[in-house]
Image (cartoon, rainbow, N blue to C red):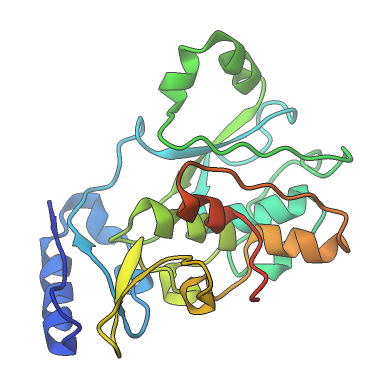
Length: 233
């Protein structure tokens, strides 16, 4: 279940945060709540537990063989790893670079990344062709780094190697603490609603001197924007 802050009253928002922190149970309490907060932005507070292994997010590296890296890593490590794979600087991101096999590098002239939301490894097993491709790769579970969260804030965290406390996308939408206005993440024509830090796509575009072709497609425009380039940076 969840509830929203009805106003931008700082005292009320602080109270709701305290209630949410006290209500988090089990392993979810180990996630950082402070990392989900950004100054002056008040979003929904959702009580949730850690996803089960069947519901968790995985990175599958295809074409690198088995045992190419760890079995799990923080979701904020995805950005430096992706930068390493495409030949960009992983040090452009604050997340820890996971230890991977030396063969996990940009040997090809092109890299294709496909993100499918809501599809688990169990779902993939029921799709023969996709299952065969995935079975030849290496799957890494991406561990959540903060709570509360929604799919937009989680996607931006994976692409930037930071949490909402740094990239500013506290949720799909938030209340501006100064104006009381409801602001949707990545609103067209509003640079202040975009992420505050560079994503993997930005680093690749800049380091490739314009040679990179980056396409981010999704039925959800906010998710597409999360993985795309951000000209305002």
